[in-house]
Length: 296
View (tube, rainbow, N blue to C red):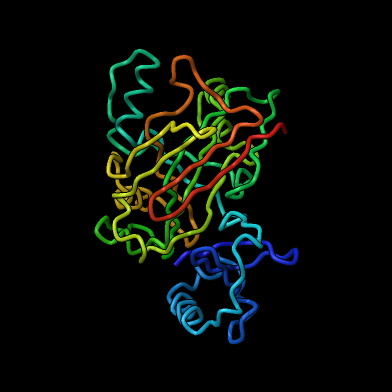
């Protein structure tokens, strides 16, 4: 099932997407208007997901609207806490980065984790604001996003995927000059609007193997990244096990699982995003987000 957040009559709505059509549960008889956000569904997924499936099964054609008639927002417009992100989680990205700094590639022994501010969240088709006075080295990074359903601490690797609510597409837009200047990831990853996400969350039951998904990034129609999640150094189950070993994961937590090779700053010459550029990030079985870079 594809679950989204959209704007309808100036109000945020929980939505179900099928093909080019969209259903707003809060407008349907038998569904409580008090349940009208994806976070609420995630919090009560054991009870509410079956109800959503039944609502869709019983829905009438006239209850569905054209997807183009609404504005999609990020599926979780305001996460409860910072997004957790993986660095250097594809071997080819490790290799291209270490070549840039003239070092022999060394695969990380443990997941490299940083966070991205909740204020960086952006919609799947919204503009990415770029302020040249803050950064003139903005880069793209297509990533598979994992949304936690059941929380927990000490989650075993073999049980980890049972805690996943669903999957989404993320563009981990990064200010490379700020990363270099501040010697860490957080500031350079957390610019306002620097995390387009969506266009929806596909529930885990519709993604049998999250380690077998093609992912692609295009800038102005030119393919820049083209890989598959099978090349991740640390798979999703391992990442969840590692994170939950030292912290309690909560429903609605978002994990960005790293980007493959093809980012801009390692190219010769380096390439960055500027106003007017259009970035598309696509993941098999999920969908495509498309964002235009604009001057802040």
